[in-house]
Length: 196
Picture 1 (spheres, one colour):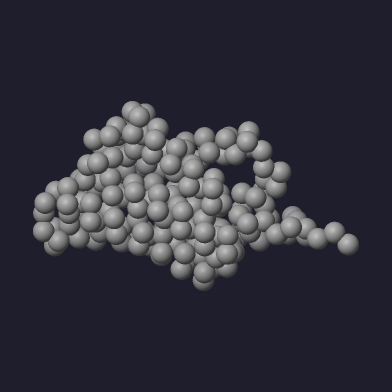
Picture 2 (picture 1 turned 90 degrees about the vertical axis):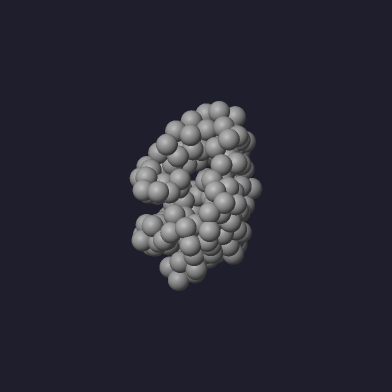
């Protein structure tokens, strides 16, 4: 009797015969998705940090791509943006954008991608309650360096930093957690039915 190997990520379940070409195409698609999500940007009055769809993109890439491809995709996104492609929020790019007030959020998204891909390899993305927990962990990893970096870059006090870099985002981030934590288990159910 042949046993079907259990995939370690949603990407591995959808593309079981992974090749360099497949992974390259997925990385490019992931970078394009992150860039598109970054352009969904709403300015916050008095804050250098806009509300973007980018955090949702980082959560989904991290949870679905797997450890190596997820981290590689976000690293490629950062590299292309730092090199000058206008793919950060509001078509921003370059080293100055990366080290500016919002750079900590980019670093945090990279860390979240790594952590979520690890948690997904432990199947946290397959059940709603563990998917929510992993998304909350991802958000903490995004906002912790984001707020530390924002406070350091602006030199403002912590009250201003929290009002400019956290409070306006809470509703949107809760919505993103709900979207990601609902979508991933549903996708897994579809994939598992196809495989059985």
